[in-house]
Image (cartoon, rainbow, N blue to C red; front, side, top):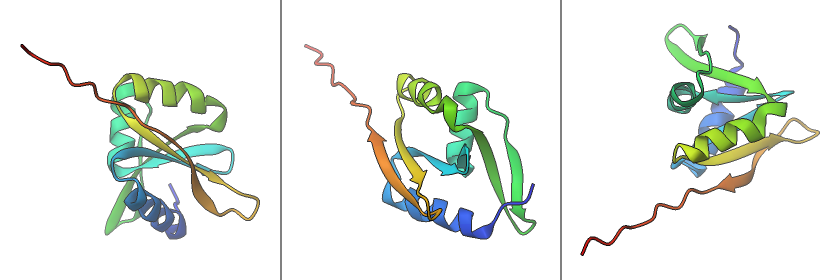
Length: 110
């Protein structure tokens, strides 16, 4: 699979902004996840993963149609993961547009 290094770089930049979230990044009509986020979403949803990028620095990649975004967010949140969604604008720039945080409730043991 061919993966533009520009996409990998942007994914990593956005991931640094939201390290505690699973990052879903729009690439055209698809949402893409990479590396640890790809492994996480695969474990929860069964999403198939691929290796891409440079032979010396491979990237684990998964993706799904943007039309399935709500379904995948729902599954991730129900599994206890916060989610950041980076959408693509008309200039093909990607920015985090939505963050869905999962609140962890403390249980008092008395």
